[in-house]
Amino acid sequence: MAGGAGSGNTLLTTIVSIDPIYFVFDMSESDFLAYQRAVQSGKLKSTRDAIEVFGRLIDEPDWPRTGRLNFVDNRIDRTAGTIRVRAVFPNKDGFLTPGQFGRIRVPGSPPYTALLIPDRSILTDQSNKIVMTVAKDGTVVPKRIKPGPIYDGLRVVRSGLSAGDRVIINGLMRARPGSKVKPQKGVIRGAGEKRPG
Image 1 (spheres, rainbow, N blue to C red):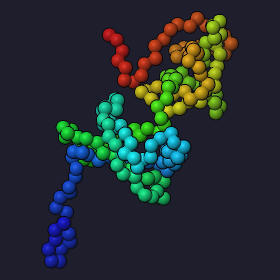
Image 2: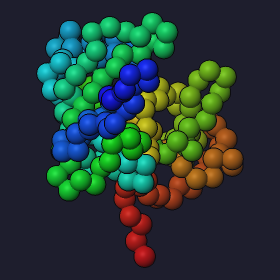
Image 3: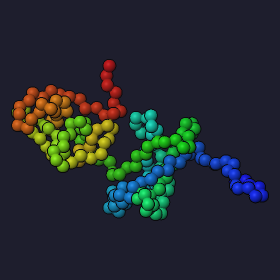
Image 4: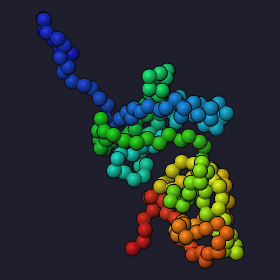
C-alpha cells in the first residue's frame, strides 16, 4: 500500500502463488459434518491430514489434476453455513492462473465397487426411484432403488439392484410391469469413454 499526506491508501500490487497454486473453496456444513463422521469412524483420513483431492477446469471432462488439502478453517461461517477449505496443486507449466474457476472432488468415502446406470433409466414413482428390469423369462419387473451420486456421467446405485440384473435403458415408455419383452444387449458408457467410429 502506498499513500501520501492527506490521501487514502493505494493498492500497488497483489502477490499470488503460481507454483504451487491454491484452490480455495467452501464446503457445506452438512458435507463437512458427514466427512467428520466418516473420519471419526475410521473410514477416511482427517481433512487436516493433507488428503488427496482432484481438480479440473471448466473445459476438462475428467479430473486430470491432483492436489492435497492443506488448510481447513477453524470455524463454520454461520451466515452461509459453510467452512472455508484450501487445496494446493502443482502448476509447473504455469497453465493455471489465479482467479480461474475450477471444480474440485474431495473423496467422501473410501473406494468401493458400485453399480452404475444411466440417469435416464431411473423413473420416479411418488417419492420412490424405480428402474425397470427384465426377468429371465422376459417379464418386465420394476425394482425400487436407492440412487447415489453421479460418477463419470452415470448414476451410482446404492441398493436395490444386483450385478446380474438386466436394466432397461432404452424404450422405457413401452415397458409395462408384468409385460413380456425381448431384451437386446445395450452398452452403458461413462462420460469419459469414447464411442467407436
